[in-house]
Image 1 (cartoon, one colour):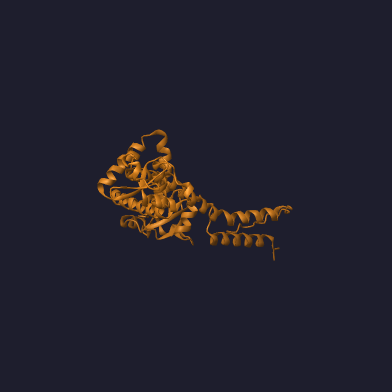
Image 2: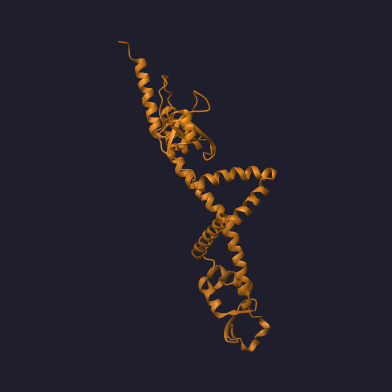
Length: 308
């Protein structure tokens, strides 16, 4: 987004072109850069606090299950071992460096996955490598984790949508809100997540400006309907129900009924209005900035032109 240049009548400094170029570069670079940073942070958070603990738990379970295949050295007579291999029941086993035996198929799999001189020397470490190579490869773990994660989110959402789910969640939030320090952090985070992920239950029709809370102070409002019939009859003209949102969370505010003649329709979309409110007026729609600059230039030209 280009930064508007406003002429002040002062003589420019030598570094002004360089400063403006740097600011333009920042204005272009920061939005995509911050977007990438936020998504990377979210990905790292999910990986560090969800994926890695789940992977570590699955690793321990799989290793414990696979270690049941280890055959102690004393269960196989030394005379039955030929070139490090022997028969144990219906299974051909292979001896590792610590003297114990593992199934030959498992040994060959690890040997093919690693260099021959990198095969672990103990049966326990052998199965740690076996589990990592066969079951916990990234191309297997990540899709499975995402599928389980989405399934858990779906089931959690369905559970919270039910009556008993809402009850337990309300009890949980009631406990959180009683904790002195945690409740402040939790409420702030909850406002942000509610704004980002909650579905809009209020249907806005258009954006208007009203003089609220007093004459001379203009406030952006969202039109939600035509209000109550009794109020319209008392006002003796059409009235509107509007939501006056608060910054920086636009889903909270005041519901006001106002005469339709006292509202000004704004040439901005609902999303642009939300951006304006969330940014506390910093992010102004482009068409409004362009019009404001044009009006300012027109006023400056009118003041500078000599009287006829």
